[in-house]
Length: 581
Image 1: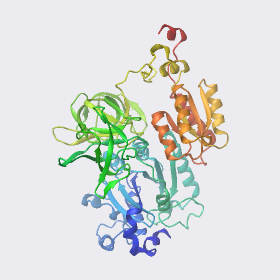
Image 2: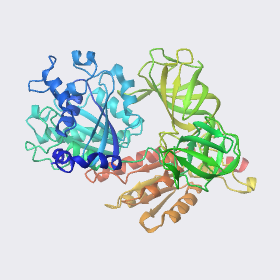
Image 3: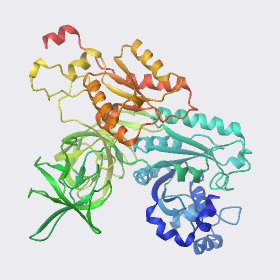
Image 4: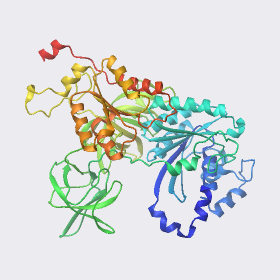
């Protein structure tokens, strides 16, 4: 079994193989007493990820609350208050490895007053494991944590339907809760979802397959963790290199140290420095191991440039063909972390990549009631609150939307007096460019002025913004969506993605986007290098249905496509007004 592979298959060679393994970061969340800490403790125990002295300490603990010989929750609840109260308060990080992968777990609290801790633990996760107590069903905190997972852009969610042993391992109960959870995640736009029936206490479907639930044929929790494709936290394939430090040991060397936030950097690449907008080329890439031929995202390096240009901490080197937004006015979703509420126009410090500027929140667009998903008006935001706000900063930030890049799309707010981190933000859009009533930016790239038809004018005629829908090639779904959208007044084009090379597909989509059309791109398997340019082009208007599980109904997917399409509508500009303009 998987649990014995770590011990029996070349254990003595494991340290040599360890650096070669992929690392999966995942978080757990759920309501109080759903069994999060027990599940993680059971996973560590059965996967041989617990040291013998730790296990002995837990067995001898006087706080053992389990009816069995081991209280697995004590393997993760590290604080004394947690052990005494039997709840998780802080985020507990645990590391373990199997023969296939390395893992970092963030076990987060279930109490509502610790929502900020859950957001902190989930900020770097590629997977969220959300526990559902099978005896209670979906609760308020289940919806809250699912919403936060979608807000933080976690690409994969696993719902562990726990305590199946108390339900007699009934398949009908699992199927009912699975349907409810899938409906919730579909509403939140989370598409990669798996539901697994488990018993954390008994060990069913955690590491070893359960004999009590022969009706379940899907993967166990650990099998899913070991085989889940790990997606990059950025779909930006253009260079993003925030300068962290200028290194000048002597007069012969001047380098710029930092961590690659996007794209692949190679010697000879042309880059532009922000905010000066001066261009130069990469002369060499230096690391602790020597010079490199390329640098990948998340890699810490030093760049030597061909020209002597003025760069300092907080500046950014970017690609010429895909620069980020450079703006001091933008909107963002904010999770408030401090007991003192967020106040409008109060001065804070915004820390974004390596850049720090003064910032103030000028407007709260709405506060989110994560229990009902409703949007509410607000003038301030209390601790654990979530809202979409507008900010102004003393200098420009160089960012992509959070949907495209967690690194360049996120920031924190700091109280300049106490130096406490008071908020975590996820950038949504640049508000500095002129916009019209429909919400689309004015096209200012034309060199022939009024003679060229702008994207704004095309949107005004169509009555909707452009978008790209990735639709699976099954059950004539794309054709039905095309017909339904056409009959509702949308200007659509249906493309078969498998017939294009990545370069020709990107060029075709650019033309169709400029025409303001809704593109239905039919493809079951699209490589990451092909998908990234689509995200860079469409941003929030890229809707990916290609990863939907076949078990989801065709009608449900079609209804979701139509729902997203309705969000693209704008006020149609009458012909007479267009001519007068």
